[in-house]
Image 1 (cartoon, rainbow, N blue to C red):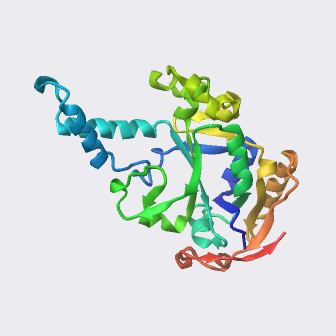
Image 2: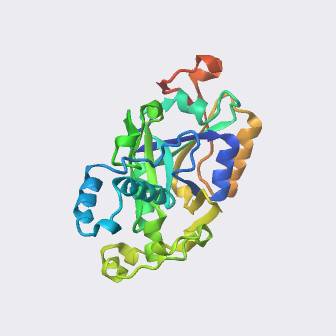
Image 3: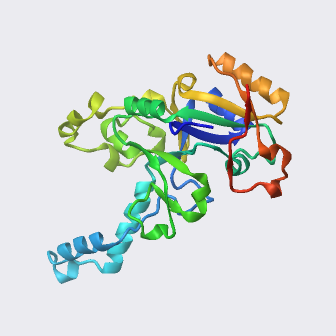
Length: 291
């Protein structure tokens, strides 16, 4: 159904209306997902940390040395501090739609008034590169058996989440604050983020001297913010199940018109329209499209 350039995002109808009305993408702090408390975790004390510890410990007198246990604790604390400045957004990446995603993220079995938004990955990447000179990355998630032994904290998840086929966009606001300390002051960034010397030696390597405009960020709460974006230019299509109510489709189209979108919602017939929630399987299916 989709080319490999298309990313998908499933959500309940009211949330989709909020996204369109907010005119931006919501990014959540990586440790703000209670359904997966291992998000952002990594192997925080491995061979590299042990080698650093061994090299440093010999330079201190016996009375001032820390123990290996204290070194592990410091390394663990550093990992948790990293999480405080890392925010993510997730997209489903596959050529077909996913009944699993319609159910688990669109909440289709609760209400057919749900939505699939699609964007072009290349257009999204070009926009992010333009407005975020530093601190932004995107790549598919690697699914692993044991996340605690991985060195990558951001782009690994446990195998149980593999049906999500996630392509993740991450923003390290700590890196952005380094060049512009007016970004999201509501988050009360510690001094280590904003009182840094020597950045004049680094900004030459980034466009706009590494500075992102603070006006494109809108604080929501301690766990997230909106990144303002030209959604009418970025969204490729908006799909709703054929069983969605006429009232919801009308609300969605009216809002799209109000916000200046050229597109309107397309109804798509899902095999799940005839299935109960107990019959939904972890599968993909193209469905049938009616705009």
